[in-house]
Image 1 (cartoon, one colour):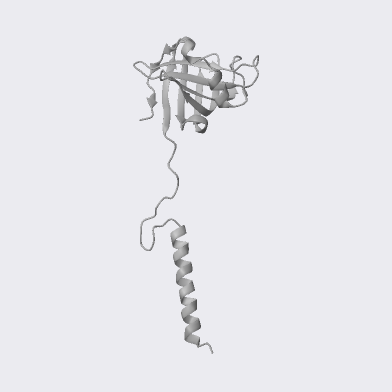
Image 2 (cartoon, helix red, strand yellow; image 1 turned 135 degrees about the vertical axis):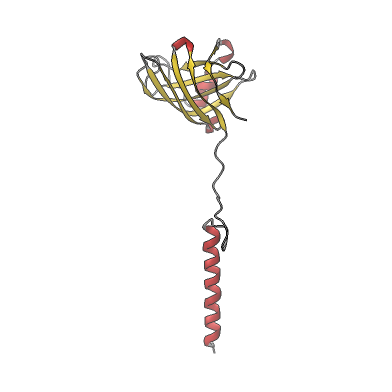
Amino acid sequence: MHSPARGITAAAVLLVVAVAGCQSGSGNGGTGGEPTSASSPAPARLASGNFRFPPMDAAVVLDASGAGSDATGTLTVSNDEMSFAVDLECALRTEDGRILIGGDTTESTFDTTPKGTRSAIVLKPGSPVQAIFAWQGTDQARAPSCTAFLEDQSPDTVDLVPINGTIDFES
């Protein structure tokens, strides 16, 4: 025969286990503890800055994080005559220290890089930082991926230009 006390004890144990399980999964660090964060760390900054690109007399805003095919961020370029925005998706480093960051053009009034084409910025850290843009215009077949687009570039044969301003690179 079961005694009522044994049933109550079993129910109390189940209740304690259930409450403990809920608290450990809620991220609040246990009874009376401070909340804890179980989220993954943010991707490392790759490059960010607001600067001018003299050959186009363009204002550039760059905010890129991550690496390889896991890069994210935005690039906007504008002057009095045109503008374009890029949703950054990938990055590549060359042996000579150049950093290529690219993605899909999402907005554009620039005929050379219309919406839906791939665009990139090539950076060479130093003092001053040097840069150049690369794009895959409508007269070229679209690269099968962002990384393939960057790999098709020949950044070491392109002359980079000193920027006016600063870019913060990953630390």
